[in-house]
Image (cartoon, rainbow, N blue to C red; front, side, top):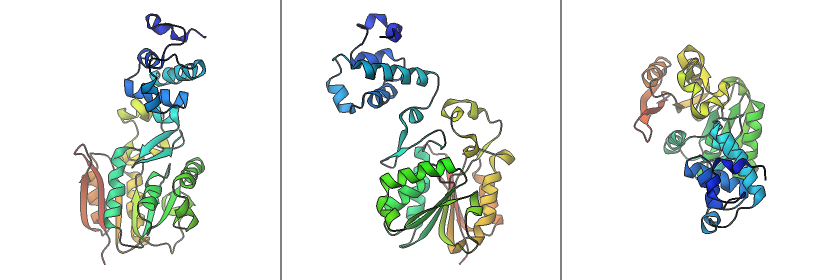
Length: 290
């Protein structure tokens, strides 16, 4: 062995048990177990039941490398290549943002307002988590998803093939390449438009913390104090929304007032802000006049 387990020499042999790998990792237990599942190819239940057995040397080596990278700050989702969102495991890579529970609020808000057979647009789809979740949750919806990043669209397409094959086969889930409204034809109209765009201002100290350090900056940072992408989406929405159509936008917890003003200035009605599970303003929406 490489001697990498000398970080905890008192724990036992060169290749420790599965449980002792977790203890020696220097990581929170939950993170360590997720990485051990990935490194070993074993399900969590098996690892718990066999925790006192000597670990497979190859899996132990792979886990040691993952644990070291996690201690250096790399996101668990990028190390394992997946993240759960609304009960489905999505492939993720450094080309896309890591789906977060807060965005589930945006998906639910669309589902609550989508009439049968509605056409829905997901602007800036990234991993495809929003678009694919909508297509899977409602077999009557027609969903178009856009992104300017070819790498992101490749990830989204792979997720769709694995999670939403029926929607693809039925042409209920389509992909368009391009930046925001440029990805669409002039005549395209939708009943609902949803987006989780970049909304962090350049220089925000959060960009130097946690997982954000590793995520694609073009999907996180917007000019104008984080509002430029939101402004562009709001400005273009009236040309692509049907009468009484909804625009739903995820945003930073201190941007709800500015976004409500943008929507009002663009002629939207029934404007409201929804709060996430932490009680923070997270999704603001408005409806076009009938």
